[in-house]
Image 1 (cartoon, rainbow, N blue to C red):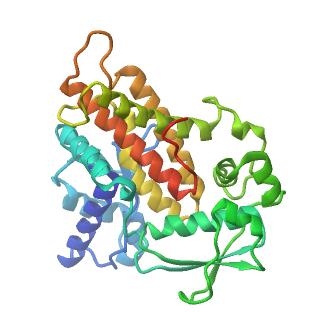
Image 2 (cartoon, one colour):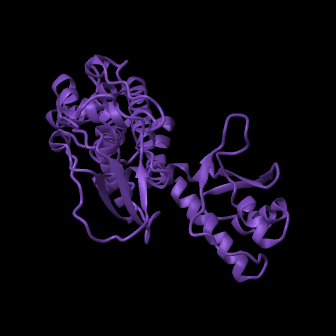
Length: 354
């Protein structure tokens, strides 16, 4: 069960509790689940009971117990506990893991660049306004792209005439028109340099990563470290992981086999990172935080290299291609798909060769 599926399961439980009059409260538009923090219980946690307690005029823990009974026994959930003041903690059904992984890999490969797109902001109208400053412009452009993956209607506007250098960074400004909404001002810490100067030193991909990777309230590091071709440079790490995944596919073709997820693969960290990508994308849209997407791509890249080092998707020595190799190759291709899709949303190229 992916985080998005678990979120929908909990939301259905809330609706049932309200329909059955076990709970009197408005049904929220969406329910957020998060990975349990270190020392916590279960695989995921949810604070929806605390959110509903006031409207329901009941203690949050009592609300959580009602929802626990509604969720218990749902496919993919092994155990539901109530902890603290009213948190729901979920332990997933280990027996369903293989089916979940199989569905996950197939879903990523089938949906391609649209994997992770959803309706978390369906019906939302966003008007993003920014100053005539390069970091604000790039951030607003990325937020527009990310929010649209969640079905939001979004437009961007600039307080002044656009800088001609922005075009080389892929930034455009919407013409006046719908949606008519109160503007959300995009105001990260300024870059401290003009687009033309940054582009001359770093090129468009490194500039966009340098501007988008830090949180908006943090300074954007825009030095030559963005051009270093080593694992210590997160931009290089992410792009190299993508190109490596594509290289595995090319090499497999030369060996006469392709990917097929027919056998369970031991890659928990990588599969978890792929499963968490849709919720990360939705969170980046909700919180107007493209840095969340950039950091998640780093997590995927690190997990990909750990997976590749522990179990090669390609035959080694005199090995013959097997079902295990085809399944590992499918996982590697899924990782490459997520990395390419995420980089594209940030406006950064994902080269096949690096």
